[in-house]
Amino acid sequence: MSTRKFKTEIKQLLDLMIHSLYSNRDIFLRELVANAADAIDKARFEALTKPELNREWQIRIELDKDAKTLVVSDNGIGMSEEEIVENLGTIAKSGTKAFAEALSSGSAGTDIPELIGQFGVGFYSAFMVANKVEVTSKRLGEEVAAVKWVSTGEESYEISQADKPDTGTQVKLYLKDDAAEYLDSWRISEIVHKYSDYIAYPIVMAKESTKEDGSKEIKDEVLNSQKAIWLRPASEITEEDHQSFFAHLSGGGKYWKALPISAEGTNEFKALLYIPEKMPYNFLFPEFQKKGLQLYVKRVFITDECEQLIPDYLNFVKGVVDSSDLPLNVSREILQENPLLGRIRKAITSKVLSELKKLQEKERDNYVRFFKEFGKILKIGLYNDFSNQDKLKELAMYESLNGDAGAMISLAEYVSAMPETQEDIYYITAESRSKALASPALEVYRSKGYDVLIMTDPIDEWVMQVLTQYDKKLLKSVAKGDLELDAESRKSLEAEAEQAGKDYAELVNYIKEELSEHVSEVRFSGRLTESPCCLVAEENGLNARMEKFLKSMNQDLPESKRILELNAKHPLIKLLAEELKDAASGEKLKDNIRLLYDQAVLNEGGEIEDLAGFSRRLSALMVAANSK
Image (cartoon, rainbow, N blue to C red):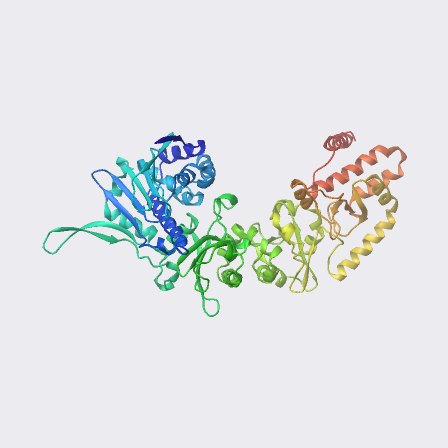
């Protein structure tokens, strides 16, 4: 026998498990049964190529009121000594670090059981009800001795050889005094029915019953229906069934919509998919997140991470696919090359997108809530799934200039509200709605009553590189290229800008010379109605936000200069023109021009390069203004 210490992170987790109060301790049994089912899944998969390993697969629960013990055992894959250490004592497998951090920081909230499965720490939930846990396991198909793992959930655990004739794993819990309810068979039956009724293997427990003659007998009773939920008629599946199955797939949380799929013909398969209500806690931690859907072939488990079944931008969808056409002996390597998976993926993607469209039309408020939660992920498809881009365009929603904060509209709704004179769809990208509304680039559109889509997700910058058209109308950034308005307005404003260019030609040339290191061009524009100036990017150039993002990723970018546009009607422009004529205002004029440029940088969300110089110039301007 050898004694080994837990990793620091696992000790932290166990301390939180043992000394914290939880609203629902029943979750420990769900996790242990789920682990047992996973072990049998793996054994069945191995038995596909080694038929001699087949047996009557079973999960057994045993209660001993005198000894105050509860045992969950299976005849699945089992574990060797190395695997026990790896699975029960190594952070890489358990995901305990992220879970413990979420738990201790309080970010997990109060519904702790919903987090347990998400971080793969289900086994440790046993310590919520047990003072000591013994795990005895023997590896399937290997002539090695059984191994026993014992721990009280404190500093260390013990590993030793054990006598166990059959392969599989037995988890024995020595229950705490306040967990005596889990020694009642009716209580165990209730929990299994609630959480594990869909498990495909019989969950057996011995129960005492009274015969007709009054004598007692003990018989094994199967506690679960074993019928795969995805194969049952929709009319037979209750809300509780769906919630329980979703919790099994996702490790917790609640689902918004269930999407059953039944495909017949050349590609026969059944699927049951779920759209969650909320983003999973671990969605931004790829190392703790399972990607893809669970795959079964004729109810035989193949893998719980079949990434080929669903595109990345729909990875928030959880579910199971059961194919009748894939061969039972399919391997994970063959899966990567099987064209049938591509056809199933296409059918699933089409189904999910069509259902989302129905929900958008029939449950608008609920859909808006969904899109605010998952829209930034869904929009990735606009960038990289050209085959479904038209469907995704219909699903995309944005806030807008003319809408209230938080209100969202679709592209179709935007187009239907466009004035007859409006030719294009206008949008602006920014870090937030407030920053977008502060942009001078919106001024002329606001003055004409035109709506402008407000895009605040980081992915929008990438999406708009490929999303150039909708309903035969071009999508135009209000902060890029030439001013884009209806033909009549554009002609009038261009004429005004051209005349201003002539009237202030000397000033334009002077500003361009002073700012030659920073701007590519200086010109007058009808884009502005209130502000003196703004910066705009070339039609295909990078705006400040995109440039900042790429630099944060250590991208080596070529020098980028933007266009400085001036408002001929602003009094500051007239003042600068007068200073240009005054030979004594040389340095003052240069300072004012630099302040003008820095103001434009701030308005577009950029960062001022010379903060000290900006502070000095601004202070001098304030002193001069107050001395008059």
